[in-house]
Length: 258
Image 1 (cartoon, one colour):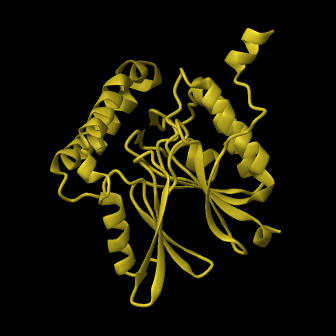
Image 2 (cartoon, rainbow, N blue to C red; image 1 turned 90 degrees about the vertical axis):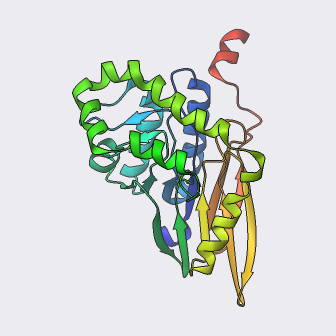
């Protein structure tokens, strides 16, 4: 029964051609939890670079995409919020997975909670340099150019896009690390009960009491260092966790032992 299942939130796996062990680890995690999921919410940057070419699937991403397709066929709802490494996600996620894709933020109702979702890269209105960068790369003209280049040529220029995004992350100073908490509090003051995003690669949870209301902020962390996630279940509420399977041996290590 769907009512007995929960919602799983993940973000920031940044899967690339050099990350097959992490990709397979995420696939295993999703497989182990498929029977518990009513909905999978991906809060951006599942891939280190993604552009949604119609009818094309990069073979690098085949393991995770096949898992997502299997989940979709099992009736798991898939929601994707675009991150700063995602460009025109669409295509596979909407047409094949029949998922919901949001280029910006999204608000949903979850068992009485008003939940605000976003990737988290665009929460600081004072960061004008990033807003300029985002507008420079995420627009219809750039997307049209990428479509003209096609998948093969786009692979050659994707490093440029990735350098731009990672350069911005390196410019973030320690004093800005709490901007996420301030943003979450602002959203709660506007009427949200729960605020969830990623981007900062640091799982955390905060509770705010505002006018007698208890509100929550969760950052789901990443699948690079923390292998973290957020579960919501109607009976037990929200819970952050980390995937640390003791029996996990990456394909690279298992080959070395044979």
